[in-house]
Each structure stands twice: as structure tokens, then as C-alpha cells.
Image (cartoon, rainbow, N blue to C red; front, top):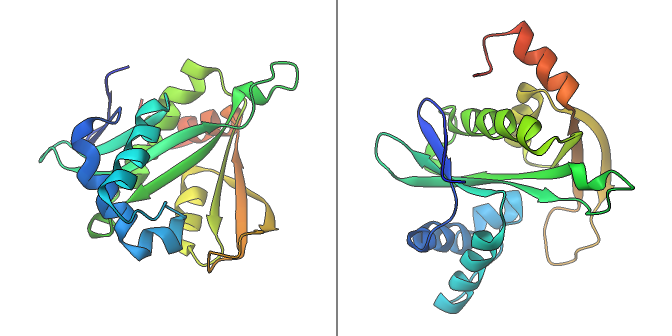
Length: 187
């Protein structure tokens, strides 16, 4: 797949040129503390993280169309591959945006574009998303998009400051109902 286009952003697969985005995300403590982005300490680690994103078929760079700048990422990660369990048709959403673009609607648009493509193209039955307890911006965004809170877990990791994560669910039926009720959703 090449690109998914919105009004102000497009989503495209990761490229070698996205090394600067990975370095910025991986060396800024804010992104590790608020979203669990991997800490990178050197050029080899930056390359390794970039390679991981390049290998994931449903990971995308958020590009600001007006400038061509890479401003964040969105991805859908598999939750399982067994068709008998149905997990092969579910995903977990991940997203992160450079701080200078917060509060401008870019991530809302990126998630609308991604989910508008993913539900029909991948025939998904569920999309899950989580956020650290202190990340209220992500909580508001998920609720705005239509995700419903389901549960909270205590994380077993001792190397992160956040110990609670809240999980939300969005189904294609709810997504479609919200699209039909409002002009908020594209397509």
C-alpha cells in the first residue's frame, strides 16, 4: 500500500528518511513516559527501531501534507493470528504525535483515516487501544473517536513510571453508527 489520504495529513509506510522521526521520538523522555515509545541511545538502536516499523504492514508515518513533514505515527498491531479464535481479525491501535502538533486535530484525522481504511479492508471485528493512566489527552481522543472504556490493568514493568493502563474497544458496528450520525467522520 502506498498512502492513505486525509484532508491535512496522509499516512504512508515507513521509509529510510523517517530516521529523524524515530530519533526524536526515541530520545525525548516525554514520548517514553506518555506512550511507552522505545528509548534509543545511539544510531544503531535508532536504525533497529526504524527497521521494526518498516517490517510492520499496518504501521504508518503521519505526514503533514502542506509541508511534507513526518509528525507522528499510527499503527495497528495484531493481537493474534489464529482464525479459530477470531483474534486474527482484531488489532491494537498505537499512536504518537510530536508535541508541537498536539491539540491541532492531526491525530484525530489520522485515526479517522486509519480506521476508515482498516475496518472494511482488513474485515476487523475489534480494535483495542490503551493509554497510561496519566495520559488524559489520549483518553479524550479515544472517546472522541468512539472507543468505549472496558478495563484497567496494572503493568508488570518496573522500568516505567506508569503502572496502570486503561483499555478501550471500538467495533465496526459502533464505528459505522458514529459515521452515520455525524459529519465528524470522513468518507
